[in-house]
Image (cartoon, rainbow over all chains, first blue to last red; front, side, top):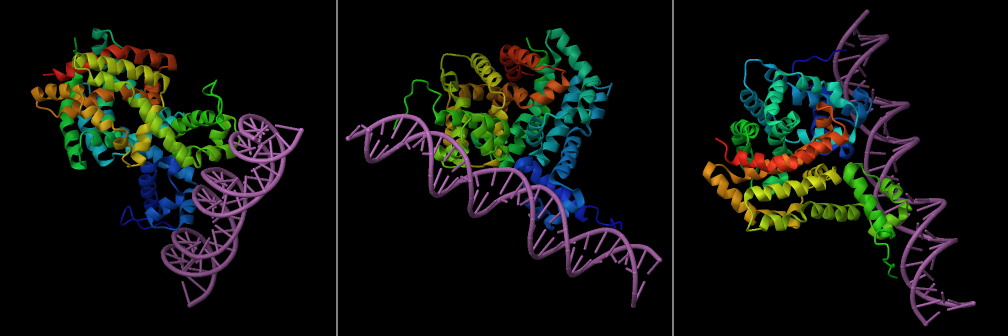
Length: 205
Length: 205
DNA sequence: ATCTTTTTTAATCATTTGATTAATTTATTT
DNA sequence: AAATAAATTAATCAAATGATTAAAAAAGAT
């Protein structure tokens, strides 16, 4: 009944999930074919429905896990009462840039599917409270109050500086004449720069 | 043979194109159904193929026009030899934010389809030379030289600050408890702020 | 008015695609 | 080893979907 788990990711179920993650994340729900996933996983198409019932059910699982993957680890950084805003920004930037180098399709996937499905997926994942009630957001508010600016601006700016290059990487690489390695090198540089920039923004004028 | 053009957008061909723009831009190529487009246009499905041969041909036209819509008007601002970097940034931010308020789905659509089709669509549209050879980019390079930083960083930052909030608007509105009108008000505020922020970034540290 | 061309419609086709079924193979239990 | 359960496969189904066709309607030309 139970599959032996000596190789953790070698069960059929795991092979399907991993293939689904690759295909869904790269092509999006609508463009992904269940046959693509089956082929990527090296399994018979029927097994996909045998293990996950439907394309949609499988997608929901992947979507959940992808969002989790996106916010995991952020909580401790954002909650830390002993670090400055600049410290947090640098840690967040560093962690996310590393993660995005490994999963470059993740943000565009999430943002696209989020727009397509006005579900409360974000709600469900508790992103809102994670951020809005964090020490980080309080520090943002403090900084914003002095500038008489909506703190959401600073939050958007930080996210933008971290995530946008990955969302727009084909265009960036084209305009800047960059190869894959050049782009990654640029992103590595940003780990330190972003915190500096955000600090400059917060203190601007 | 020729349709009279008294009402410019009332010809069947135009109705289809406009409907296609709406549906493609909102749902992307893969999720858009030719029947959706026909219904949105209020025409018989066969007319879509009669006028445009195929879904793909119609899409290519819309894609071209959408990219054009994205870069039109930027050229003069970027080329102007008599304005400062800050002036240009402010003008670009203002123009793009206005445009994005009217076409909020445009950037995610372009970025998604650009990633899906590694064609040289960007090449074809001449975005690269438009930017790389502009007075604007020269000013970016000058600023970057002093900071010993790749000028692409500043380009990415400016694009990010302008475009990202629209790409991530569902998440932003959720986290910030914002209604549509609140979000637009925030974007209006950014018109002025972005140039200030970019200036602060360029001069940072 | 008649003829020709263009536009529009309803019906249908062929393919793709998500899903199911029945049979076969493999693993587990007794 | 026999019996039972789980996993896998090939074949097939039904619905969706892009596209075509033949006929009808509308517009334009003679």
